[in-house]
Image (cartoon, rainbow, N blue to C red):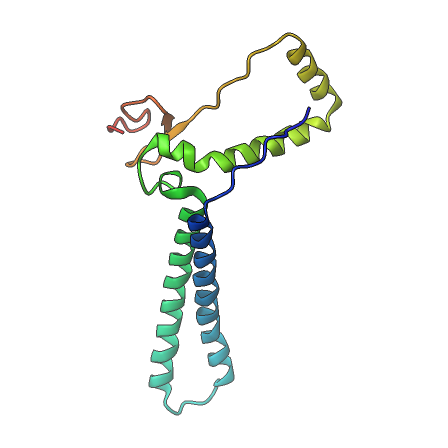
Length: 162
């Protein structure tokens, strides 16, 4: 069983967004972590305590903000607007998540190739001309975040309109 189809590559814009997000996360981590280094290096020194505390506090807060923003941007870059849940469009979400869904299928397929019983079962299915199954697409409810069928008009958990 060979998975010869190459993975669809992310667009250059989405790759750039992922790397930009990683850069923001790295900068945020450095800013946040630097407050601990500053605190340790000036331990016991109370001259200009108020100014240093204000500076370290602002660095820590700004670092956390950069970490969160970078994480969000890299997620949107990896999964797309709809795939990351920012834009409620199931058809676009399926397109955005296609590289990851296909990669997951390749990983599972490669693992199944290593199991002799699974190989025999797949050969038996292939020899009978079994139809391939269609991937199920789920839509996340914007209210309660529960997963619903793609065709659902209302959430199966909270009942709100999707």
